Length: 79
Image (tube, rainbow, N blue to C red; front, side, top):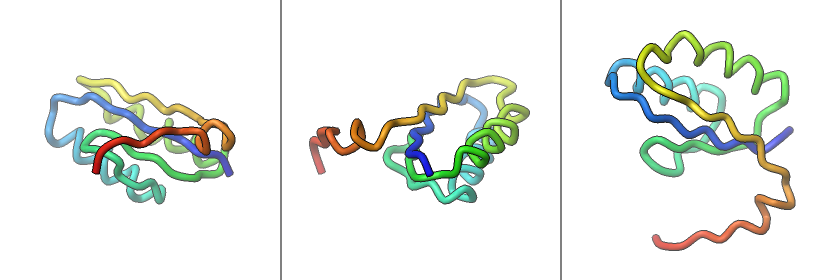
């Protein structure tokens, strides 16, 4: 399993909702309105990229794998 952060910027409401729903379907947790993170198998990460690609007619998605030790050193500020 690897930690992944998914960040997206999509102007179309319908596409944005589909991306959000897909991230939740893969067990990712919402961190902010357009940011998800969670643990996922490498094969599921590749699958997620394939599923999201057709939804991006007018936007961008970044899938960022994060090493466990880097995630453990993160700094969270705010509520």
